[in-house]
Length: 270
Image (cartoon, rainbow, N blue to C red):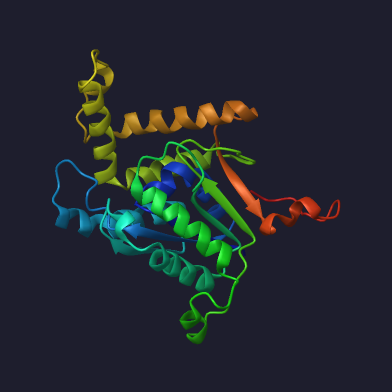
């Protein structure tokens, strides 16, 4: 079956941006692998850095089990400081994963999407884009080739973003897919507590109140997360006549698909 590689900054990035699609791919038998760049250690209002570090793989692996991923790895760079990591170093680590796993599809952040306020997301987007673009060039990171990792051309890259642009691939995530997306997010307990608490703090700074949100215990986040995920997926789905959907800016075969002979591109199962 095809192999999928997801390159993200933090635990829960994949689930929020592409969790329904990943659930569908896993259900179809695709081998899906996740590589997170940071240790997630700043994503909390109540835990210590050490406690967060200890949760980084525990929560991600629990979510991976829900979705059906084949593997989860973390590069353990400090959360919120990825801009301090040299681009070429992070690109090389991502390229090592590309050459080792030889994915048919890579999912990652879109480096050209606007309004991305998190430096970790921006750093991952550029490093991942370059890693997928140049993994086929043998003079990039020759030590990887010496270690037995051959160059690899990535056939497809699907880019996600907070404010996506030029989307050209929509995925129906109705039914079991959105249920698994939400269930996987619940596995990131620390991050879901943070998500609700952050929204409550934002409302607290405003000249109004939204009692149905501000009255919640941040640890009682399930109904809030369920509604937030479904609302977002509904907004996307409405554009395409679907109940729930995720969409991506996708590039295929180095842009050569525009030159493909008629009828030569097979239908997709996802």
